[in-house]
Amino acid sequence: MKSPSRRGLDLIVGLGLPVVFLLGWELGVRSGRIDGTIFSAPSDVVESLRELSEGGALRAETVTTASRALVGWGLAAVIAVLVGSLMGRSARIYSAVAPLMEFARSVPAVTLVPVGLLLFGAGSTTTVLAVLIASVWPVLINTSSAVASTDPLLLDTSKALGFSRTREVCSIQIPQATPSILAGLKTSLALALIVAVVAEMIGSAGGLGGAIIEARSRFRTADVFAIVLVLGAVGLVVNLSIEFAERRLTRWQRDSSGEVVASS
Amino acid sequence: MRPRTATTFSALTTAAVLLGVWEIAFATGLLDFESISRPSRFLSEIWEIALSGKLLDETVHTLQVVAIAFTIAFIVGLTVGALMALSRTTRRLLLPTTTFLRFVPPPALVPLTIIIFGFAMRSEVLVAAYAATWPVMISATTAVAQIDPRLHEVGKALGLNRAQVFMKLTTPASLPLVLSGARIALSVTFVVVITVEMIGVPEGLGYEIVRSSQSLRPDETYAYLFWIGLVGAALNFLLRRIEGRVVGWQLSDAS
Image 1 (cartoon, rainbow over the protein chains, first blue to last red):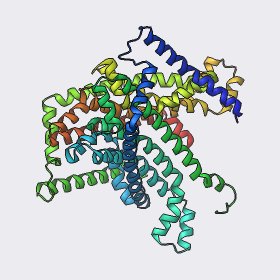
Image 2: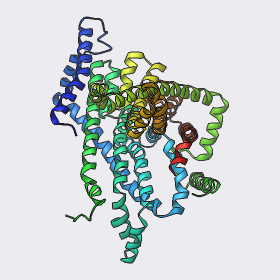
Image 3: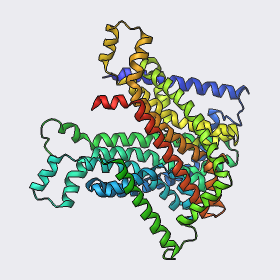
Image 4: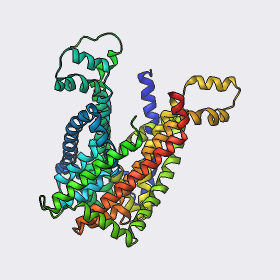
């Protein structure tokens, strides 16, 4: 275990590299050694970040992108857990669907954007659809394999208790599969954000993706850098919150290896 | 495990049934959307694009970029990942930077690389290599870190020097994880190259699918969609085979 002061020191050392890099960049642009119209100076990027967030425009675009990603991801989660449970319980459905799934998974979700554009035009529907399809696979695969490998002892117990099928799935198999399902959800949320941005970029459909394309077409390089920075920050926040949620939700799991844990 | 042929058979049956239902529903006019193609149309479209030689050209372009970007990502990811696992100083220096950079969505970099390099292959290679470096790096770090410490003791007992330990113990012991990281990286590379072609560089399969959609040619769009899926599936299949062959000893060892 690391002591807090040690971790603080590590962080300072770690931040040293980017700080040196950014300072060098800034000085390079100021002294004219680096072309500032292509590599905007960090101070210009900060300035344009400030300009963009004035009037709440940047926040609105961030909310648009994030909500599209979340809606697509949420829908995918529901579908994937339902279908995944079905596949996990029936070997016949599994063997009919699994190889096709393997193929469908190899189709990059972003290539569905042009198909969505033909059907729905540019906008939220196309974006959400692409996000949904991208996010469904990790959860589906994890759910079906975790449900299929439910401890037989638990299934015998449920039979002995006279549980109905629905009850068996809902109160035994899905809870037992929770850690795998969560791992899938984690992978797919990170994907959801990326796919949302790409879909917005392809369709010029607003959001952060649309904003970045617009900034580029106007050659506002500093704005492009600023939006990339915002996207990195959003990605980081999303990933940190999933890790936090994962630790909270699977806490019971770590205890279950030992004695019976009183349910609270 | 079910026999391979049976699995393939049931998969083909499901695929045939799905395509058949799709074809019949649209051919009979049961479903009618101008913007949705149907199997007989997009399959013959693939054939036509293939005859014109365009399909091969675009596929070769895309795969060429995938190969270059993947090679760069593999070398960079492996080197940095191994360094971070082996040396505390490197880890302390790089960890915060890599943690942030890892979460920047790679496609968001496309507008930047286009400003810097223009609409050229270099932009594609750079973004795809960037995206594919992370899976390799993470798997390399984990692989080296999870090596059984007893192996190092064995190395010491055998009187191996550091270079020998690295070549004879560390490398083979971390190979399986590194390879599975490489497999993920290759599929990431493929997806990102297609994506970059869709949003920036006007070349390759990704560009063709967007162009066909913008000129409202559904048959062509679905043809490219299907073809890109096939190429992606073939890549995955190939890599699984290679992985199985190289680390086969590990699997038989474990069972």
